Image (tube, rainbow, N blue to C red; front, side, top):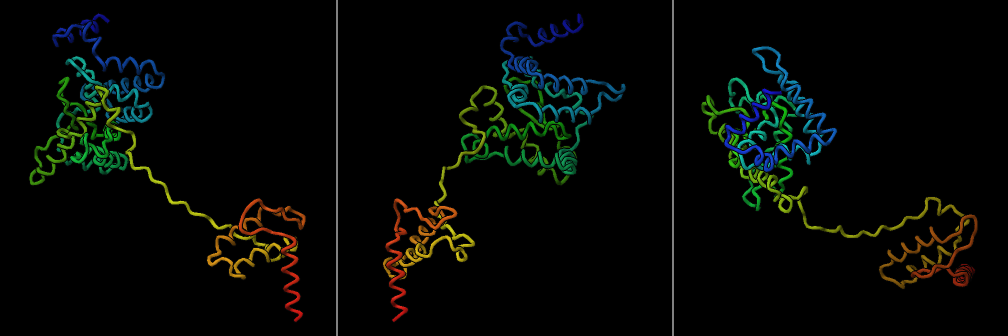
Length: 331
């Protein structure tokens, strides 16, 4: 405990910052405290800290594979209101920025003895379906767009931050390259040394992290709270309504075989077209069919007279029509 307190004191003195002042302005420390107040966040954070700090041997600092798995569980299972605050907190001094950089415990999850070539690292990522998917999401949601206000596709900061956080826990894990409080530069642990004739492609890939205005703006906006109005969670599209399509009710399957529906009602409806009263009578017939299926009392021949509509079943009209037909047949 004494050594820990001495280290903390040395750290603050070494940065030239007053511990009391730094504690008040350290948003990353506030984010860690907020995480500890949430049971799920505290549990999964403690788990990855324990795993990533567990030394295996004098030559092997930790189990990198297990550390990555624990980190993925933390960022996948803990709400972003906690994880984003720890990962993208704004800083005014070096102590805060170093805490932000240490969020993912870089000595195990990020750094290695030597920096591999970025294209080799990308090739390794592409052999894993989950890493490949996460990297594709990052390129889709964080590529610099010069046609938007924020330099992000559809002005969506949230999508970019989510894609960035989704890459943590793989060999491609990105992190802050130093403890600069304001100069935000993030990168995977790789370089373009030894790229040969692929150096241009390698540099372009690396700049997607180190010189990406969308990613930088998204991190800064989240830290200072200006992402609320500029970064809707879902892209906004003009609200359009699909044209209304009126469905034509169909006749019951057993209509032609039914003896309880009453032929007088059918005759009255179809007579509208036969007598040429309406040139386009499909709508009128549809309304008739609707009345047939809704206005007949089950188990009886009675038809309820509808309140409105172009076709009305009337007993007197039905009798008149039947009599007329019988007379015509007799002649």
